[in-house]
Length: 92
Image 1 (cartoon, helix red, strand yellow):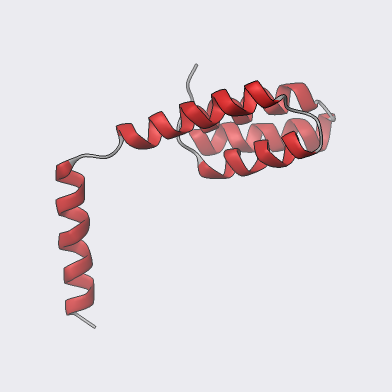
Image 2 (cartoon, helix red, strand yellow; image 1 turned 180 degrees about the horizontal axis):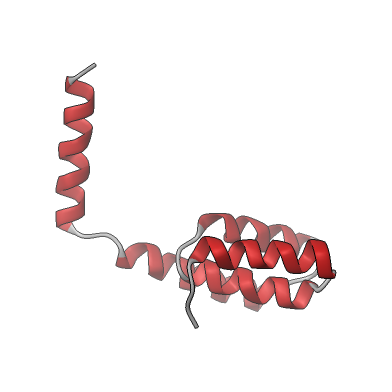
């Protein structure tokens, strides 16, 4: 299951807002969260507080989100971030 994470998030919002389909919205947000999209985690937490998402489903989404975020970390990315930050701060 793929697609752009923000697109999945927006599909979830559309399902909830226009179609009143909470179950389908949650599925889209879970997919987006598994791709590392932070806003989906926030929406899933809100849905959990309102009783639309079960605890085990939220926990699985949180684990998948963290795995996706961890997968994007690398020493090369860290070096580039440090370089860009130094460049920006040096130009101020």
